[in-house]
Length: 263
Image: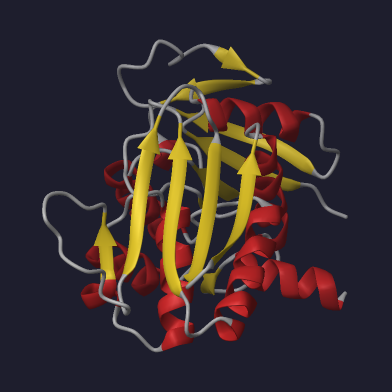
């Protein structure tokens, strides 16, 4: 197998640095470049055999997969460069607006784009379990909680939003009408159609997600707990290898999993 060239954006962050570490240990990958913001102290310094740059356009030439774990504003600039250079990109950034998602999908009509709010293989299996459970428990009330470390910038998490979208799709509900982000004051009786989403920020928790299905006299809980970021980094590397042989299009973890399951 030919080695897959990767360029990591957000190289100095928790996810970016871990991806670089795991990539350096993977015989199927070659680290072609690392990118950080202009003011970052790593700029010009060497990490895992490459110098950290603030210029993605100067690194890529179409023979690589860019892996991006940064912030939405930076991602939107990176994906334009990827489009210009006819390259490929794996996006693990969260917190995009619906308009930004539409822009990303539009660019995927020209180049391969892999977007996942959560790169963990386990959490994507969790999505399938939630989908199945929701089909079985259609008469139950549903609430979602997510817990993350106190540094997380967006709320609710991209994973919690994905869970809510799956549930709404199964139940045929409009997410813009039924999702309730926390509650305060005299809210009155709970509307049976609504789906609550609650974000907790505390300590150094990497990511806990729970879906509650409630009926009179009983509650069913389905949870996924991630205790370190290696699950996300490993998933991002799998996504890069997967995307390296794809043509233009919009891909996600469900596509990767289907291919692995079906051989």
